[in-house]
Length: 307
Image 1 (cartoon, rainbow, N blue to C red):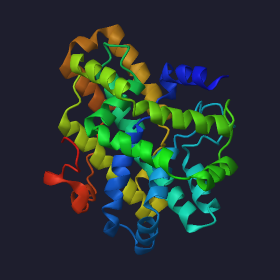
Image 2: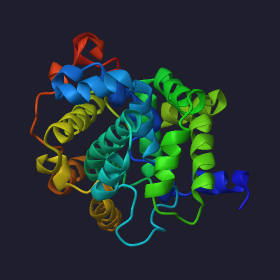
Image 3: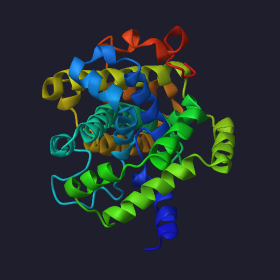
Image 4: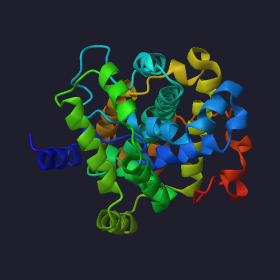
């Protein structure tokens, strides 16, 4: 399949979307790099030495497209696959990549099990607003500089060693690894395109669906806490008990959304909110890492985000 045609197909396919977009993953990764005092000393030393490699791993966990077309148990967002990448790394730089990859999965436990399912349910009267739309809304809420930073990390640094590691560990999809890599780089470039940003900005301005700054900050806080907790406690962490793919939660969201449409519940905002709380509650447990993060966090605990 020609690369351009494949890109168009992926852009039009909801299942190709990422839960948090590259800008959001870069933002969360940078917050962690500004807060290394929260982590074990050995991890802090490693990430301080290889920040770009860590950030590449943080977004390159989405390097595989058509993820469901892999052998059973080899989905690139399964915890054991992420740990395999880390343990297969044979030098410090690649171990930093592996930690970034694992942090991506930790953040996705919030994105796939809470953020996206809730938004799909709360906007159940509008079928066009799917997974991809809310991914871009979160990225847009954080601002263009983080999209630009994602592009810089992917395009301006040599990550051939990391890509070779991914090629060794990750199972093929309907695309070869080289095609996946080219698609990934193309998607990163596309999301940094000024025309695309202008078009999506107009869509957001006309949308009747809000993504409140408080909600943005809450999701970011839970994702950040999940990342730190995983690096501290690994398989004993809260994130490790959840599925980063969110397969069950996303399927449930679609079923509940259809039920809301069928029963007319979408006409009652209060009822939809109650359903969202019943099926996809935002975790109440605050581990406290978000409020303790470093000096780069921004004024008023906003982390540089418009929250």
